[in-house]
Image 1 (cartoon, rainbow, N blue to C red):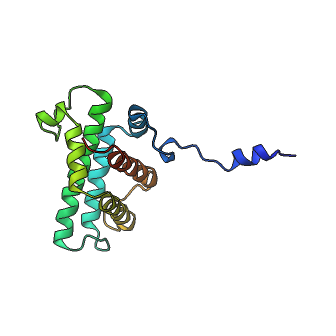
Image 2 (tube, rainbow, N blue to C red; image 1 turned 180 degrees about the vertical axis):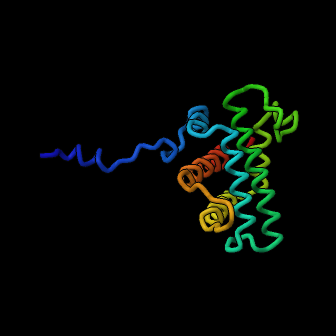
Image 3 (cartoon, helix red, strand yellow; image 1 turned 30 degrees about the horizontal axis):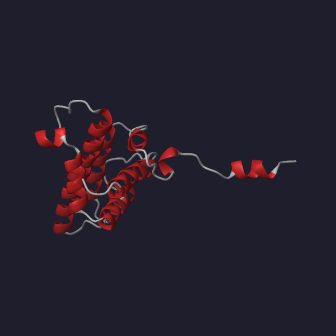
Length: 167
């Protein structure tokens, strides 16, 4: 016969990215880049953008909304690069989207993102982007095996951004 403790273990999930954000910044950053490297994030983000812009059933059927999406995705990629620099403290890749000053002080990018987008807007835009990828029915085939976990990683990055406060 199973004990009460066994039933508690049975109904628990331990995926680290789904846990609450830690007070230890480096621990959070290691979790963020544990399963996906910065290049992986950027490639997937670019794919998501392509699918969203090509999807006639998405929230991006208006030109102005598409422009806002493009700006958001560029800034989200820059945000991811800033967090990668904070974690690794090494020279940026040759394909860096950051300025020399931002490469030295990646917190400038984080602060700029936080100032440009409210937390609610960023989360809504990310959700709309995911929805556009899921509902995309175009020529290209979408690998959907990692969509949810990738979405959670992007959401985790946004949570880090708005939790960290100014600068």
